[in-house]
Image (cartoon, rainbow, N blue to C red; front, side, top):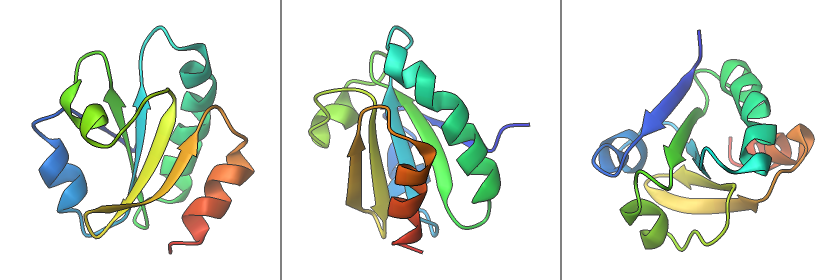
Length: 107
């Protein structure tokens, strides 16, 4: 079973901005090759960080408002939200160690 949360523009404020846990949001699209490359990495991280950080995915094609609001211009873009504010940004398909080092800095 996956520990990923799937977001849409309507659920974003509650699932991300009002979350007690930090939330890493993956802005992605079906047609994006690099997005598909990091998807299994994010699933692993979601399992390993369960209870510490939520990992969420938002399809930018289906939900244009939120990515625009946060200045997402390229995908994959990962934004880490803590206390309702973006505190970290990772752009592109990066190694798992790069993502976890950024997450660990906010735990």
